[in-house]
Length: 264
Picture 1: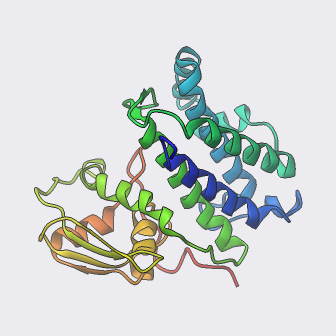
Picture 2: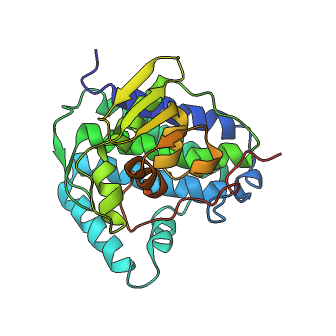
């Protein structure tokens, strides 16, 4: 068994997205999505840049630190998107093929990595397990807008459990980043996995029940809470779901109801 099975989940997530975009032309990859007007090309630039950055953190810490220093400096001028675009000049089918080739190679090398190994990051260091899970989460979340734009519904599997656990583990962060007090207790979660299994977390401070995919969509801000089948009871649970954010960075606002849907 691989030391880091989450690497296989990251690979499957990448392969699933690749299968959806493999038939597309350069022109098709320039079509906009419902996420801030990003094109599919923009999504691939973002994913490829951060996949490469995570990979670099395992092979050359000095080079990674220098890259992050350049990135932080860019925030005072052109911004993050401009920096990513400068670092990843390829576009269209060339970029698509580079992205998936690197993801495949990365997953193969990460499979035997010690899951507890500490890796530098833009913020605090994280474990290898957390780092590759973050890459799966980003691929799944940004893949959502691609599937939506193409009028497709992704076939979900229980590998989404990694994203659900990430959502649970960022309960405190979701409050802190939005300037809210962190409750002492986590609401009870009873989530139904794609396989039909029941995943249970939390205590009795309110309750959240429904599809695990919908929970993952809310914590990654790819769907509005109102557009999911989640049932939310209690003030703590409601506040969390209305402010859930399982990713780093400044506070972000979830999409408005009805704005993130499958095209067509």
